[in-house]
Image 1 (cartoon, rainbow, N blue to C red):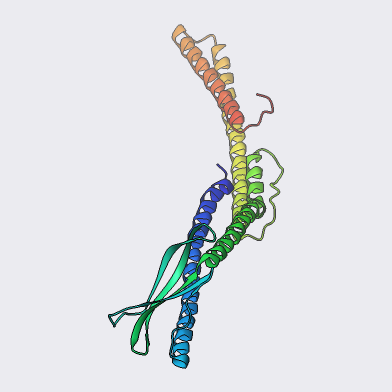
Image 2: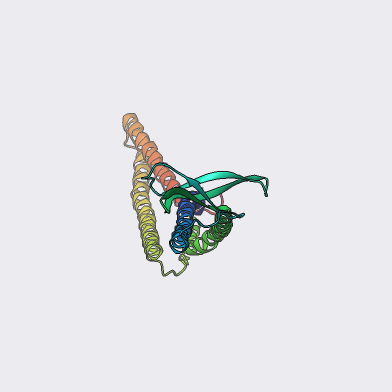
Length: 281
């Protein structure tokens, strides 16, 4: 697997997870802020009811609008604390259940205690949240597509010097006189890689030339004494003063020198093969 593909497999899922978690957190924060705004609106309605009672000494008229409802009910016990709550109520006009934010508090009108209930519909709030979430998710999807394209284009461009160096190393031939043509880069790591590759290949070439020269010289130096030995053995074998035992010894020496000469030639051939000095197999 290529590094870019590996990076995308790791980076994109992590990015998606982070964005999804952020979206969920964003939803709850947005929901909390909008509900808090509804509570402020309900508090304003409460202040208006108290103001109306203070001015007129009577309860304001109850109302039952689509997005707001105000009702009053007499209570006998005092000490009721103001309370915010959320409830689902059936809307006869729309024929479906609707969520309301509710505020309950007590008012005193001429010695009579009443429980005032003010409700505001959360439908517009929920619709606004859905709209914002839809826009947010669309933006996230668009950003993910841009991120994927940017990773493929930008990272591919950033890794181009590395791929060029890798191709040059694959094509490197120790017996070739051509030097590697590495791409210039301003990325420190890739520049260091290029310097290391150049240094390594130059050292390999120098070692190869040294080994090649040593092999050729060693083969020549070994072959010369062997030729002299074989010549001396031939001269000795022509002597008429040698007995049968001496002739057999000279024959054994000649055979040993011949095997050593062939071994030297075979080792030289193997060295040339290992060094890829032959074009054909």
